[in-house]
Image 1 (spheres, rainbow, N blue to C red):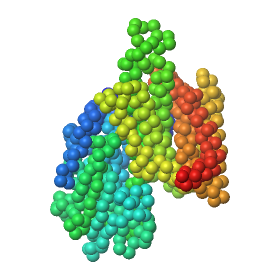
Image 2: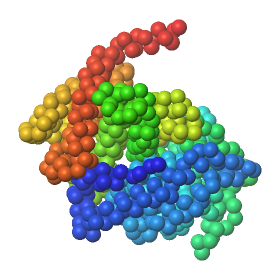
Image 3: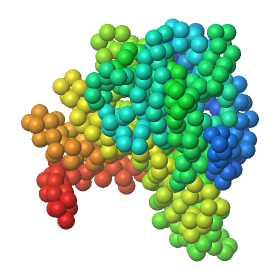
Image 4: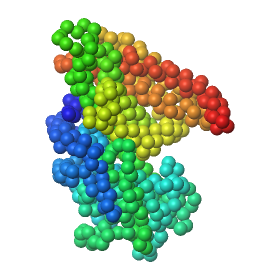
Length: 594
């Protein structure tokens, strides 16, 4: 059974993500440590006691579709209502619309726990949170008055409608269309696929944000507009009116997240779905990216949440399952498999990778918060830091989620391949996260071609130097193992710096194919090197605070294990980036010819 790691989450927030600075930016004394502890504690309780017990039930039940209606799993509606009544949906929303105006960092921390308890449950509210941010930033005052309060309260939920059968990652190919009605509204027509929570029975209304083209739209992504299309139209007094011309034609039968309905949505079968423009005509992609950037960090948190749950599940099994006799075993009978060195290696790898996922997500959230609260040059600097870290925070934790869940199945042995143990569900659920909200390959392209050149490359170089300062401080500590840890993590930062310089030169010289060939290995290199340095930061903070509990000693041990066993991969990744592109491109040509 899942137990929320509230203490570890709180420690990382304060000592690695610098929550003190965030709290000061958001109001100082009002955002006290006691309040943060209360929020984390209650979120952990709700996740463990209310959501986690429903996870396996939802996986088996799925989301049946019948004549356009979708039924969520048993207990789902009650759990969602209790969750919304707890105020969780409006944690970061503006207070003027009923939200609490708290930092993104706290939302990320709570969403880690929701996703550990049930990724299928958490993904629905994740999209609503993104829609709230998009509407706050781009919607008219009238739309804000009509929709935001009920979205913030959780009375209504929202979706994001981008993908079409012929337009996945390339949104310039979408064909959904909209027509002006002459009264300020629009009629929307088209089909959207893979729409998460496009139809369900959790709320009375569902607010769809839909990308479509107007008749005079320019070609490509420059001709896309964003429309708000509700399932039910809303009367002037705020009550629900007639059903809009939108329906769910089917739900997908998926590998995982069975409790989350993934819908095919059809707009305009009966003359046109009534919609309202969000932002300006032909500039909808900029509005949608407000929602997508929020969602990319949130998907990274999905990988983190599943990794934590899979680790806990595997650890419990390894302590209970007995096979053979581990070296040094003196007890009666067989020893727990957790005592066998190879299984212990897998468990430590799971723990260390999960910790890397956590620090990357929390650091990205901190940059987003500071970008929201800063002004002038400082705002520009924090905005660039958030932009740099977003592809890392999406891609690295989602890859880690799959890797850790797979190790969990392996630790279970043959029983891991049997659904009843629950280990397989983590792997099935985690596998979608590297794919949606921009595949991890797209995140790597974004990182290399758009984020590395920020401020002429000075943003990424500055971040690397900040990480190096952490390692240099660790090298001066009179604490067992810190010098060796600092040396190995420092070498990984050398690998990162060299690969970064090579890619920036390639971009400057127009060697785009070579740069793109190295993008995915570079992203992993960046994640491992940065994650290792941030684990060292956590270890340093632990020593400064005093090692007083087993969790403190373990935090230092995890950082050391990562440095000794996992971070060495950056050396080979550096060579892959700087020397591997020519053979890849040559092999690609041969492969295509064959």
